[in-house]
Amino acid sequence: MMERRNWIAGRQVDGVRLEANCNPARPAEVVGHYAWASVAQAQEALDAAREALPAWAVSNPQTRSDILRRAGDELNARAEELGALLTREEGKTLREGIGEIRRSAQIFHYAAGEPLRQGGEALPGLRDGTTAMVSREPVGVVALITPWNFPMAVPAWKAAYALAFGNTVVLKPSEVTPACAWELADILHRAGLPAGAFNLVNGDGRTLGPVLVDGADAVSFTGSPGVGRTILERSVARMTRVQLELGGKNPLVVLDDADLDLAVEVALQGAFYSTGQRCTATSRIIVDRRVHDAFVERLVAKMSALRVGDPLEAATDIGPVVSEPQLAKDLHYVTVARDEGAELAFGGGRLDRDGYFLEPTLFVGTSNTMRINRDEVFGPVACVIPADGLDHAISIANDSEHALSSGVVTRGLAAAETFRRRSRAGLVMVNAPTAGIDYHVPFGGRGPSGYGGREQGSAAVEFFTEGKTTYINHGITG
Ligand code: NAD
Image (cartoon, rainbow, N blue to C red; front, side, top):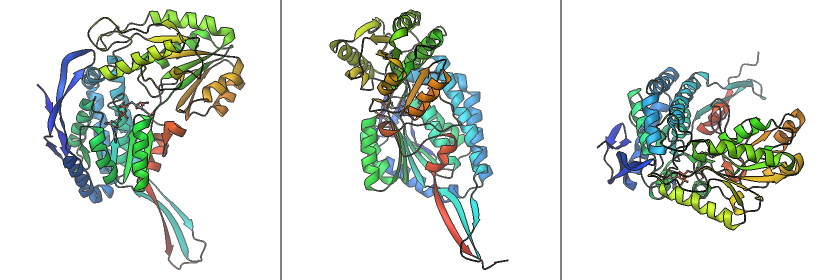
């Protein structure tokens, strides 16, 4: 049986115990055993990152670029194999798993350009004979704490930029999905990363997380709002730079002039693909009353054609929920919705087979004040909320504790632009699903959905570097 260790200072290190990583489609199938690190080992990983920092921070930009490019090349070359591994540990379909590996390769290739692009500014000083220079430096040792739903892409989009800008890293992936993170560490080491520049510790977030937060110069976290808040409080107390990407309760507005076939496709993909386990998944479908019944009828017809099953099979559209506790949470919310008076239009039940399978589930006749429309479920569960026109739909969309992604389906340019301007969300999609993002533009939510700056694209440099302004009195005035 495959056993995988932690990575500390360029070496693979045993942990305090081995934990089985199981396939949610076939829970008896063990993907591998993964060593969980002790608190002392988390500290050792921080120490290793600190020791590697001075050399990596000033390393040749071409060296950093080459290593990141090689990591991307290997991810691409092994996309099918690693995609299958991702599917076996997380449960999304093989098509989605391979897509996530390819996306991670693209992220590394894009980030490989960053060390070469990094520049600064030189301005004439306001005192005669002086120049003011603005430059950027790495922040230092960065702790990356990641969730299970994108087990390769989230570690990739944090690590690639952190390393590109000369930081050293300690990654703690989700307990539920350690396999992809281990492969990423292995790939980065073989790509030529010096010992200690990237360290991996697996294990319980509640015990390892605080050690990492206390010992790092910056923390980049993606996960649930509750954990994010504890990390924020801890980081603020130490004045540590922190970035949080948190939950969503993402609205999709369908206006009465929408192409209904497009609206149904956009809702279907956004709400149920990847088993609804995306922070950007559509969970509130706000539909103009004038097209409500026609929309619901077509959506239910499409949902009944979705094939829920073994994610390794090519015909499968929806794989299992990631774990037994997550399935229990999803089913709990199905009960909550029914108890609140929501009407079940489709699904709602666990499949009668091995594995954590839930039917894609749609409720109608819901209101935005119901708990099912306030709390993040993080499963294949969506609700339809009727609305009376654009203004009403926007006010419902914005009435949420979350502000990550939002969408509108309309043929009207003015309506689309009005929605774009007035939506509170950090991401706005016009005639496109709320989930599904590009890697070369900033990503993130507002308010309780995100804190501390955006990730990816042109935004990454802001978080992973510190600014420095230098005044030089060279005395030359001519
Ligand atoms: P989670 O918060 O339970 O865990 C995330 C990570 O935090 C894990 O590695 C976990 O071990 C660690 N952790 C747990 N307790 C900790 C503590 N006290 N201190 C430090 N670290 C701790 O989240 P999850 O269940 O893995 O992921 C699902 C959540 O992630 C959802 O809320 C989803 O919306 C969110 N998410 C957000 C984005 C985004 O970019 N906005 C992307 C993906 C997922």
